[in-house]
Image (tube, rainbow, N blue to C red; front, side):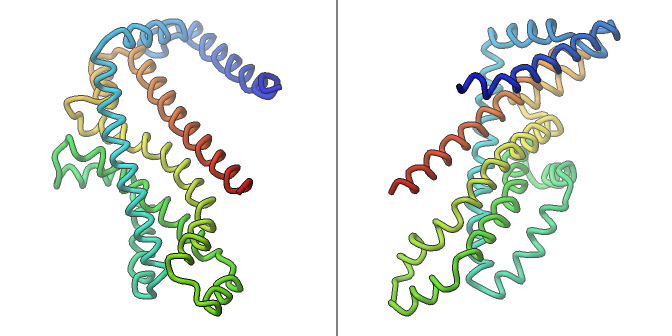
Amino acid sequence: MKFKKKLPYILAAVFWLAVWQAAAMIVDKEIVLPSVVSTAAELFALMKTAGFYISLLTSVLRIGAGFLCGVLAGIALASLSYVSRVGHALTVPLISVMKATPVASIIIILLVWLSRQTVPAVATMLIVVPIVAHNVYTGFTSVDKQLLEMAKAFNMSRKNRIFKLFIPSAMPYFSTSATVGIGMAWKAGVAAEVICNPQFGLGADLYESKIYLETSKTFAITLAVIAVSAAFEALFKTVFKKRRRADAEA
């Protein structure tokens, strides 16, 4: 049954791979558009080298750290915005500016202030913060007002209100923001690595392949980035889905 559900997606992937291969054969210039076969061969060759895994691990650590800091900062800003009118007045324009600022501008500005090894993590954090802050704040404001009044009437403690009302209300919004945010984090983090060109990282490898006109390597590393980003996204979806099932059964 599961295979039947996935079959259309598998066929769609095969179709687009066939289109890619056909286009590469028509162009017939590896430096312009490498074929599926040459890209796959390059990817497998990279996977046999220690340098590829060092770059992969470095990118995962940088982007993971930036993502985690972004999630924590986003929750903090959402909480401040909800509990305080002054906090709300201060955080709303900040989040709006962060959402509207181009990733490239953020990276270039950070390069003036920070080392090139640090910029990817910080840039990732700044991309994730507004996504999480906006969604978590929406979750807080969606708490049933009647339940809040009832909680006050029965003198429910602040701790119980947080864990029994606010967190359950915000969790669906948080799970959406985390799933979307991890994909955006990888885009921003790798882009920052390309611009900053740190010592290690998949983005740094992308920059190097571009300098030496190794187009098949560029495509191979890009596929690796897409695969890792998709894997983290799928992991998040699975974890949150299990959490929702556990909450429903409880």
